[in-house]
Length: 159
Image 1: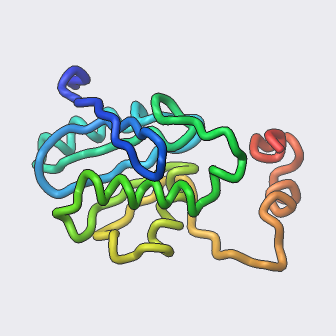
Image 2 (image 1 turned 120 degrees about the vertical axis):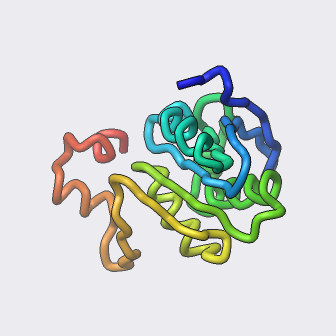
């Protein structure tokens, strides 16, 4: 694996600077990391898929790694994070109608929202670790997680 061949750039979208790791030419594959990961989680996939003729891009999401960290808690909604992804795609892949998206963990959840909010941007979606869970207004996510996994579950503890 040649990490030295992965380029690092900063792209400004939605008023924040987003760090991306990029390698290859061709159809874009966007990798969305989980918690508490960074672009680095995708280093093996980036290197391999770039060798097969894909352009691989893995950002650090807002609040992670070398991407800006907005102060307000309200800056981290799914609309904000998906908006960053859309802005990023507009900035780095304006020539592509839609792209491949791969998400893991928290990144899978963001990828599901991206698919719901802007399905025309997605050529294909691969998600690892987090299945799609439709919104249910009668259930609060945290209450459900506590009921299923208990108070020691990491998401419950972070609250």
